[in-house]
Length: 404
Image (tube, rainbow, N blue to C red):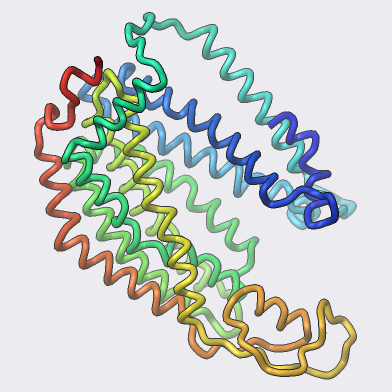
């Protein structure tokens, strides 16, 4: 992060140019950063199981939710606001400038040093007993393979891989559609800002509820609510005012966003509490990370196919505009063509054309996703997860605790 902080601005300027960095260059850097963060995350997952008493282990998910929410808020909403020149000029400056209050390089440098200081401080100040576990790297993979062979783990993996398909169109496309209709990035940032305290509060109470109502029953309630949130989001997009964003519509979007985040947070806290409950403390970090990885995969791999389906179901035509070549950002559009995908839409607008939406694939795909979610929830997901929750903890343990 420190190296990127000193070089990322130059990299951003040269991207797309001859001998400049490519997408693969950024991918390698992000891969390295995520790998390092994931390594710390594994250690923290295992640490939480040993720090908390068995009766309070569900609060590990609460702490994780609050931390992740605060981190995302700082790195998305706060950073984007401080990095935007319009925000700085409106609220903090008398003399306008083209630069924001915080640069990307400065932000990375600051948090790079914070990472180093916190990690060193934790290593020096925290005292714990020397671990008796002397498993090597290959032993860990052997343990993971043993976990994967457990029938109950295989069942929860299937649940994780299909459970989030019902929400994919809402999670991945709804905000894009609002921005596309003219909701505005500033309004979206304010919506996220208002949503932040609700998400923190829900994360705390969801940890309490997961103890009172059992984690997977709470997860099922969140699942049903999240399907409802997807339908509400579709109605919200469809009723976008012709005159632009009004006060009442802005409040509707905030309400929809808060409700969607509410159900999402409940599901996340509940499933994390369940993972912490069933994971063997002897191999807690490995066990929890495996389950969390599959859960994350279930939320990422369908996204590609859902976005492709949205494009496939969308029908839009670009109509040529005026013959004037002034103020054009691209080649003049002289004949009609399909502008269903974003790149073609930008080519149309840059060439002076107008993109007419005939059929928006978002609505079709969102309904299909919700129907899939309802069907799988009723006939497979709910019965399976409630059955898994009723199993004794020994049903989730490896013979011999995962040791040789």
